[in-house]
Length: 253
Image 1 (cartoon, helix red, strand yellow):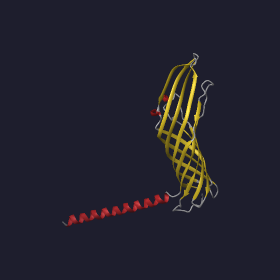
Image 2: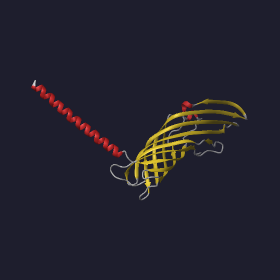
Image 3: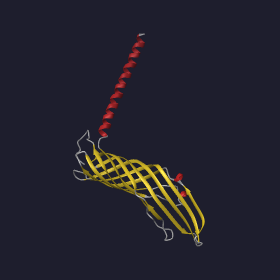
Image 4: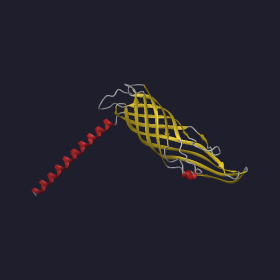
């Protein structure tokens, strides 16, 4: 009986000792995280539009583009890890609205052509790095990020035709929403200007550009074999809030 009680007390002591260690470790980790998480957070809204590079085409196959300007937005959080250098995470909202057309001779006096109407929106997430410029107060920030975008809404209409001596000999018009890619990758960079309002608040202007280094917004089989991977330019205005650092008072803006 005494042996059982002694064993029980040992188990109880071991349990509470480990629980105390676990709670202490958790509290220290939480405190470290809180001190680590306090630096800068920003929100910006503005306008964006896709841009296309025409590339190398013959005079007979130059594509045409008609793009629209749409709402764009960005939210970000950054943390200083070295003098003038910050790392963090970024979330952005981008909309693509454009019409694409391309035609070429069929070799027998007729014309083969394709017309695309495309509208889609994506929510992007990814890491970012930021470089502040200035000896004491960093009014200019250069940044770069790599994000994965997830499709929110999508509309696409594909028209493929063959025109033979001004007579439409074949014509196909169909919705191709299902061929819009649900996930895209973008690499972006830009310049952000900060205009201090108080010690912890600043107004911002952000000019950015993002590129799609691989992949397209749609499967090429739904765009007449054309690869559509537009760039994207934005102009946004917003606010940035600087949190006090628990480890050191950073006076840079």
